[in-house]
Every structure is written in C-alpha cells, then in structure tokens.
Image 1 (spheres, rainbow, N blue to C red):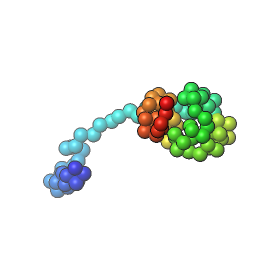
Image 2: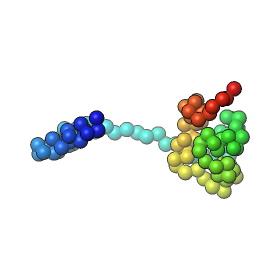
Image 3: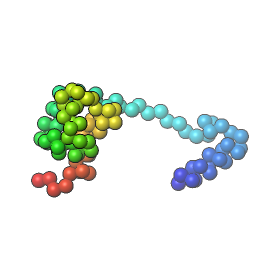
Image 4: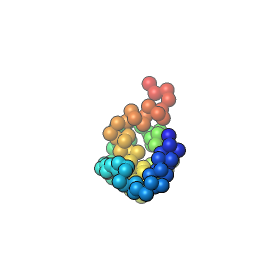
Amino acid sequence: MLMEGVRELEAILASGRHPRDVLTVRTVAVIDAWDFNAKGLKALRKSLRMSTAVFAGVIGVSPKLVEQWESGRRKPSAMACRLLDILKRDPATILDHVVRGAA
C-alpha cells in the first residue's frame, strides 16, 4: 500500500501537477495531554490502587522515576504525560495490554 502511494505521488510529480492540487490534506486538532504534577500523579496511581512498582511496570519506567515524579524532583516528559493521560481517561486501554493475571 505504501509503495502504491509512492507510485501515485511519482505520477503526480511527473505530470507537472503540484501534489497540493491533487491530494487531500486534512487538519486535525491534537488534544493536549494532562500536565501531571507530583500530586496529580500520585492521585492517579492511588486511584488505580497500584503500588509504585506495579505502576512503574505498567507505564514502562523505573519505580525510582515514579518516586521522583511523585516527590516533585522530576517532571514526566511530554510522551509520559500522553501515556499517563490515556491511563487516566481510560485505564482499560492500557491495562488490557500490559497486565496479566489480574483478579
């Protein structure tokens, strides 16, 4: 499918037309992720009833980093905030993929 798109683009360029005259460009609004602070992060973890170690494992970071976030010594990156936001809005989206044997 990707190669088909490349061939289509080549044909457009070879015809002398500009891609913007032929291709559809869509503009989308990207929702900002929640800007997690120490208190909000700890509240999220506690609302999910997870230990620091389990929470760290779920989001793919070390427990030490979660402790630093929760103490305010470090701040989650934009990418981490995006993942944490998804976890906050819809925990099942993440947990269904990373937690095994939950009862």
